[in-house]
Length: 205
Image 1 (cartoon, rainbow, N blue to C red):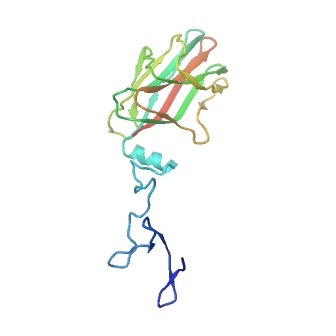
Image 2 (cartoon, rainbow, N blue to C red; image 1 turned 180 degrees about the vertical axis):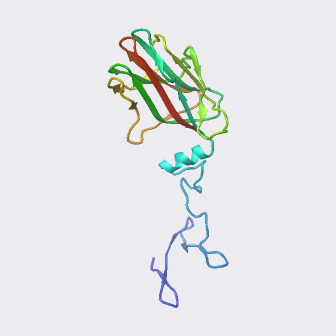
């Protein structure tokens, strides 16, 4: 449609509204552009309806929704497949967005990342830490095993590493979405008596 010209020669910018009627941007009684006009998925952006950017992750963390869990340094007595798990219980009422999985192993190896629908409940319990000091507890059940375990679940990646090289499994903005009743398991292959560690970071929303 043709633009509307003001008496001073300037023009108004507008668009067709849902009723197929031309409408210009709205201003308040003082002539200031009204706020809350930006929308994403039809709703004003916010923590519950985010435009996904790196800053949104920081916003969730600042809101007390970011968590980390680490095995600390472990030393295996011999060749084993060690395990690490972050499981989201069925009754949690939360979804996990896992955005980081870092590890180091004393030998060059190939490891596997699996999605699980059953909690592997490895022998040792980990405490997930809120990345906002004083924040609430995580809904997850985090465990690890420094003894030989059997891989389970659906394998989605096979990250490799060099000997004693700190490795980030996720790159190029990759994330995993873990609904309630699902989890992430990481299986570490040690060729002999070696040290290893794993750390995961996620958001609960």
